[in-house]
Image (cartoon, rainbow, N blue to C red; front, top):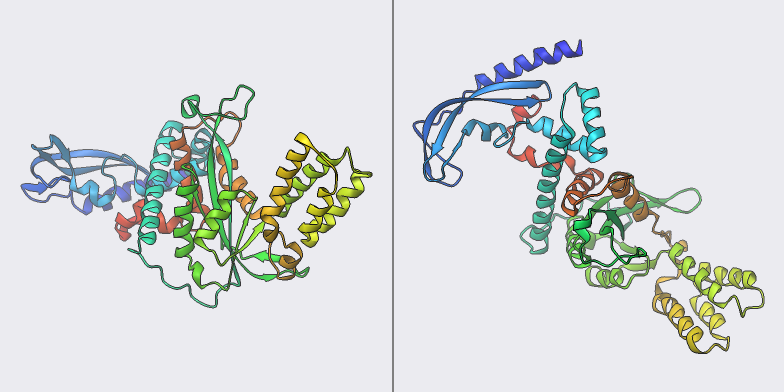
Length: 421
């Protein structure tokens, strides 16, 4: 029944599209470069749609100045230079963003009875991701330059807006890491770092007094091009979401200096919180460093952990500074304590809990896993940085709830044709 309906639907769709004319615009028409092109007869084109292939006859124009031809009807239907309908291209983008290209081909064949090769899915999904990424970058630039001024968020606003940032390495081809140092035994890099930011809101607490993320409130931006590029994207997203209108903005990070430099520049009024789990890792490292000299290392760590949870960072520093170390041991101790000295004002954990704030960066770590790792870090994958960026752009678009808003084909596609093709 499904196959019969799809076949009938394909015939109906072909008839509907043919009834809209062949795009004839007279003996001459403007080419995409602005030249006058002459009519050169009609040409057929087969387009693969969600209902299967349809064949259209279109008026064809030849531009002598450019040496190329074009069909105005292709522009009207959103298939200029394409053999897939916008509807099928969107289906492919969804599948390619969710699963490996080979697996996506199997899913489309099983669910939609449309045969598309993994290579076609790769090209189509990456092209869609590149368009989405370009649209996001253009929007971000326009917001930063005040060419677009976002409206104030509709009230009542959630209580807090959180901004969390982290990064992870994406496995790439050897050509993508030439000349880059890495953490492997041979000193060579095998991944490219992608930085991800997650913005979300919190309106209330659960029965245990813990903050609860508002459902559907998360939006994401990312970059393979380093912290400065990410900072520009975060600023634009912060402004787009009306960050300056929230009562409380909270920045949570792992303690890296660049995160706080970005936060102080973009939202200096925010509360800055060092992720407590990273702080505990540093505390364990400190306890290990002093284990040879403390009377009871386990008890010493337990005491310092209680002080950390209470936000009493000076007590940790005092407890670690009382031992008579010298030389390398003393220098290493000073470095380890520097982490606590520099971040003491970001470690008032008892106060943060009392105010109903998150003290951990679980949100961004979950975002890293859901948006990046589940698709771009599967076994055996080796990306180009550009290809990975295109697919991650699609996943960020979808995870941010902006798929329909940013899908590049929708704006140009006549609304009466979207549902059909």
